Image 1 (cartoon, rainbow, N blue to C red):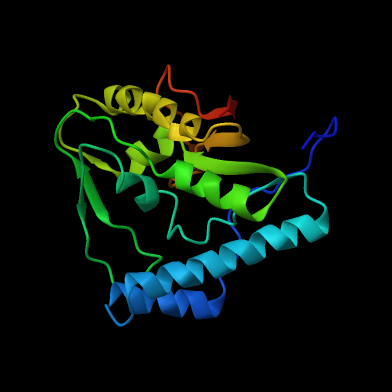
Image 2: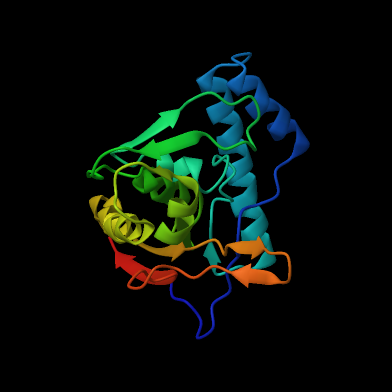
Length: 206
């Protein structure tokens, strides 16, 4: 689908319906199965796509409602990051730690692209959390500094396996979550380590 000169898109995830919040917590407490929660995720993702189409959005996302948050979703998939898989509420964060050099692993975004292609003919978009946000949440017990951890983490976006989906075109947006620290006197904006871009938007022909 050709895009206009100034295409429209959405920023961020769709709001979580209260019934899905309860279902996610039920899943974490093993009250419902993975199959059940995945069915619910798919239903809300299809609804999010349809909402954007009705609104006339040019570049659509799947709403990202299958993601509990933008840290755990990728931390669980990063080779070399260990996850404490216990949390009782979906809005909590796992305790994640890196104790060795990061490896190479697929991030599962190809499945998100396939989902978009099944349910819309419009250009699709998937979001990737940037290294600055990840190093602020994943505990570092291997790298000599936060900077070296971030620099080793930065290329992980290059491993997004979108090229496995022949004949499609999608947008992938890699974004960092801003970090704001309150001090005794004034808020302090924390900068990314040198050499680590805070925002990268790339179009992948796949």
